[in-house]
Image: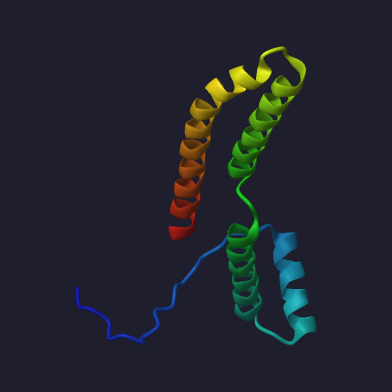
Length: 120
């Protein structure tokens, strides 16, 4: 196998089977658009790829949002405990260090997951 010179584009040949009604509708659309069926399909593929890139880059990861919500909930529980339970401040201080370590490790895990997904 020989290497292609840089800048040389390789075209892909696709073969698709569609229902006869879809074929007739596609031919009609191509005729009305004054384009070939190949041109229409290329534009559909380009649009789908652009939408997929936009969605993966801008939409926040659901698990990351969930993880951050858990961290906020834990912090609120500690604040509530401080305010409502006798000796809550002392107990919260004892739990705070472990909670902080857990929160930091969870944030690092979320960041690593997001970095891996963006590298793909």
